[in-house]
Image (cartoon, rainbow, N blue to C red):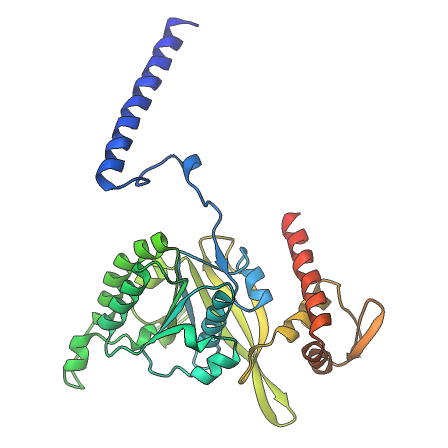
Length: 342
């Protein structure tokens, strides 16, 4: 070994010793694990909670919504934003998790949530009077470390206290944006430390005077766009009808931002009124797409056996025959894993 190499090795050793002393002091001052080598960090895999939709779980790239992150779901009115959030709560409860729903809109329907599989007896609900109260309650609940999911419905309803106390025609420019920016600076670190999934539901507005480009924007300023790890844009595509009666909507969800997997993937599924996301419809559609269910004209077959004629009749068969539905769903999930691995 040459003198230059020896000198370089000595310098590296001295640097590492100095770094180790600094890290020990930081741990002493701020608590163990405040700074560490990346290879020492445990739990590298992100925990997820299913959205209740197979297609959306696939589009998200990791099998669901990430825990310890901020998520934003936005779209036009009656497009299914709250329905997705309620499904996430139901899926978290199935795994034994505790959840909270901050109902700033004062419009939570407990009977609908029950139909979607939510255990109402073990769901925390808060109906705050103003925005600061809602976000303070959310912060304290998340800080407890006992919750897996917190849903805030919606950002547009988080009215600052000063706006509520003022006159109806008073101009209060940027108050809500400032409130959201301040709250998210505080909440983000807490959400990460406690491994809680915090879902903000948001509404759409239109910018005035936009000649070119998309005039649509979400409420509450830009802070949420930056702090959110996942942003979902949900749109109603068509109505599902039984004769002349509308029974649901066919919706498209686009993952417009994703910090944990590649973004801009899409998922389409049915939301049935009073039932939520139609798993049977997804099993039929994805089964055909992946070649597990065969489609010839309007006839559907599986393993050589005819299932029925028309998508709606096969959907009903899946609802009436849970064993067959589970069997096809398992094959779909296995096929998706195979495709993802290649």
